[in-house]
Length: 113
Image 1 (cartoon, rainbow, N blue to C red):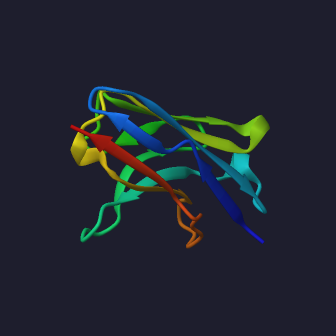
Image 2: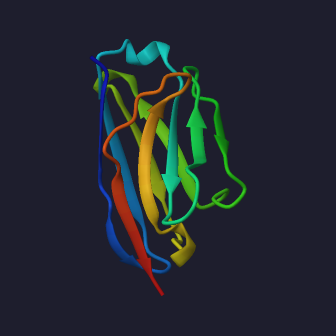
């Protein structure tokens, strides 16, 4: 059974930072590309960042230069370091095993202006 558990969300002022974590189980983590997605109220879920097994990364244009995705295969975890947060970053953030339809419960990020 694949499980993804996100944590690290919260309320932060604009310009602040947060670090999200996602712990994965039920998969051979080091063999899987991973991603972070987000969904704001009334919007579709969108890709934020992805990381391959080799560590290559890709970002949505809206977060380039502000967010950094990383992974720790020894801990079966993927992270999202978010800096210079903006109110438009407010959303529920989810991690995903790319190519698989498993999602965690998400973690709420709220950025106040």
